[in-house]
Image 1 (spheres, rainbow, N blue to C red):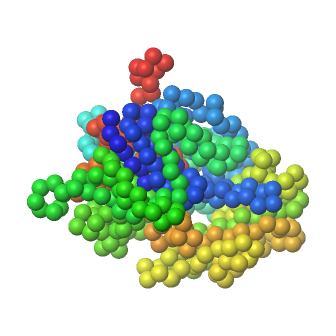
Image 2: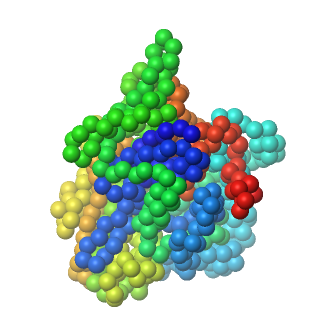
Image 3: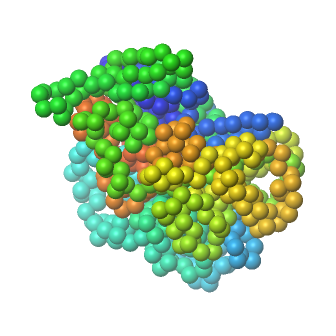
Length: 532
């Protein structure tokens, strides 16, 4: 049994705390904000309740496995709803929106109706994406990369040639080989944004995302992701973890090993409470689920940094985001739960998002979630709840930013103007001419808010981009190279961005602590305590 301090009470922090506490460790979680959840936040106003972070429930087996590790079942805590359609797609030059429904047969029918011959092509694409997904789950996600097991080599070697092509070919090129219609290409290419990348920079390995949203489907937890965070907190406390909010870690304490000054062991943390008091906690293990850049360049002393400031000059950041939380009077049957609004010229759009200047693209692609289509708890009866996400540039290295948001138009000009344009775009393409006049609640959030509230590197919304050089074991180590007992979890380290990846990263921390070098999900405890 060890004493462990977990920095950050986001999804990764709560999941790590729950798993380590169940394994018998003494766990304290320190969260700088007043509430748990991190980027999976929520906000309420005038009877509306908004999720301020993730909203797509993918990889259901990952969630189910995590709950099983804690000796419980997901369905005992959350009510999941299958969305039909999974999402609706709008484009600049579309004759009308396309509804994407779940399941191979429905997807084949949709693609064939848009482009003759695309039905067969998408069937082959889905076969390939499923194989890639199974390979990722079986070898590249549930692993610390501390050792490559022989069974992994035996499993992967027969696929080496295909794997090389999946890594060296871009998702854009893989999609272009499959279909020619712009609408279909956008449906297959948009998951790159979930990966904090673009179709041209994400390896085609990530076409595995289509196995998730097109075949497995998209779900929604009633109560939103805010309810999921509540459940995670309850599970962590039930295992014995102590959660403390309003306490910000300012330093990871260490003791030297040897005389070189290049090796040390973690001994605890120094933190500051909301009233300014200093707090010192001893620990054998420190798990930082804070932004990795902040952890390494602020919390760790200079001579012991695995990722010093010079390292970040070569890291590709994911995009920033402008968010809008909109309460709308009356119903919006023109929209469904998930809606995607695409620009015709993706390359121009992405060039602005990932350019050197911090800008909000014009025109911009955007994502619109209307959870009130599924969940009566998130809006007053008869009204709608809209969450709008507009990918924008991350902050520039010199500190320039698109800016911060505010309530009722009080945000920085670039943020508010981006939201105004998005509202006009939604109104035009969905055929809701009076949308702007029906908005009764409005709050905006910009990259500067992400930097301030979450110490997000360059104010980005997701984490480092999933490019070839920033995927799998190339994404980085999940433990400090110089401080024994300092581990990392969360979206800014391996295996990557997204809530499922954060749950997996927590499991990989548990593997590190146990000395487990396997590359598959941990065995689930059986009813009598044995694995199954």
